Length: 369
Image (tube, rainbow, N blue to C red; front, side):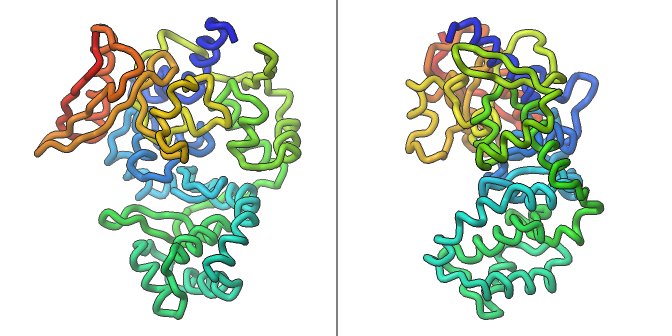
């Protein structure tokens, strides 16, 4: 692919992802709900990473993101791929019911390995319905299962809770201390939407293409973790609102209402599990193959926090606690030296991270020219 096409596609993705420019502007931050609804769902298997994914796009502080959870606007749950995401609270049930079935079927073998029976699943559901009208912390959920004869060890509790999140019975509530909590959707979410199957398919695929495009058909199928038949059926429902472009033999999909690309792409400090990388089946457009081993050292989907310059991963960063301050070390194993101007952009990105945390943050930039 020509360098000019790669740059153009990357910049379009940054705009669609709400990163350049961010959804929150100088006029004021965007709400966490608007960010989540815009992206359809936001990776959040790690709480801190998922919260910063919202903060970097919205301009909100961590406290404001967490207030949106307390206010029941957004929730964390397992809508697809067996992975935790932020979703709009009103969308949690229908998204799980539409998309999670494929993952649940694939877990049958794992359930047999762990000795999780249909009786265990049904009993856990009954216990949750009886005891989770208000948020209950993860340790207390584990204790609840154990008290009623269900062995919670060896990830059994994790799978039982996840199962009932994927069916739309439960979602996560706010943190209790440092622990996640779980609660019945019926008692936590003020109003759950109930679209038809076709409406749900059209909504989820349209949100994805609009917020992640340009994408390929395989990107869509991978994000949904659905067969190509399902994916193509969903895409056909919104075909009139899609634009198709062939570049270097590959067809790319963009939504007709995709946000415009404006200004330079800039510098971003993105968390380790962000839609920027995990939202796509193929990452070659934004992560050069020669750098994959640095970003995913074990090639096991455990990503490192990324320094992104002009829409391409250009280095790594990490957070380090130092007494009363936070130090953000940027450019760990940098892929290229950072110029003085880029260093200043990085320092501004670190300052934005400090405002999000509500902490004093120092930048330690290595690899600068």
